[in-house]
Length: 354
Ligand code: SF4
Image (cartoon, rainbow, N blue to C red; front, top):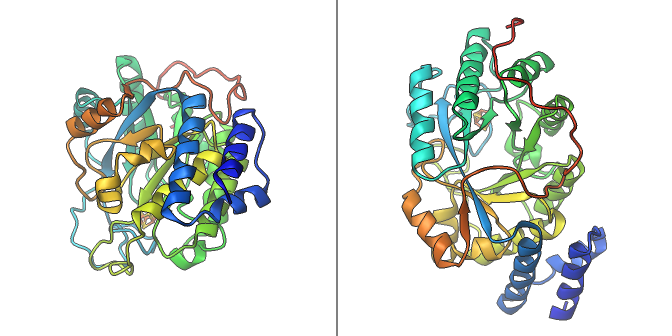
């Protein structure tokens, strides 16, 4: 495909129209470095049109680590793999609030409480999470998010009552490849959680991991499912192989293929907040700044769940060097789902039902 065709697709997306599968697949056929750079150049134009020059910064805390019953092949926290990571139960409230404070001080505008496990099984755990969310809501410094595994309607109601506005739950990879990376729950289970969260009025944050052994087509299928689910935020992670996991020796993706995949996500999900997250330093190496030009308008700063990130100051400097601006607050711009929700976030508080 020539640069003209890539440009035609970019203008179509900017005009507010969806690309057909055929057009997406033709974009994906751009394989040479020159073609991929042309794709990145146009994805940058799409990003700038919908997202301007601001980069959304978020941070996470691993609020409960390890001992997970699930067998996701990439994950250091699965009890099925003999990894050497810190394992601990849900952190005390004060530690979670201190982690939020630190995230805010380093430049993050969003902060997510992430717990290992298939789901939060204990009422006491959910109550603690709700208290922290309510406290963060009262502080009004950070937009709180939560990533607590598979979600029941009751849990979703409790979180909504505490003031949570966004729920995170990755689909990880395309539906056709999911069974190759996990056997203890299904892709449909994950989709169901996003539907429950959406029904409760949450903004949705969901993405995946590149480099698990999936094809480019699997990544495209993931993007199309996320589009159908009307997700607002799409975190993209890149496999950082963890010793003792089944994917410990998985060969890395070439950085240009990662950038091409990010660009395709921007073409498919033009209004979403696409954010580069775990593994970006190792996966993109010296090409890391190009992730913004390829279509990312957000990044996760600080440490990841079980691996260290680089210094937030370096990330902020990189954004400024590119002539972009770090954005400290979530929301405010058009998303894939602008105007869909009418339900107002309820006043923060712990629901009596818990
Ligand atoms: S990705 Fe989540 S569900 Fe899967 S093993 Fe890791 S902590 Fe458990």
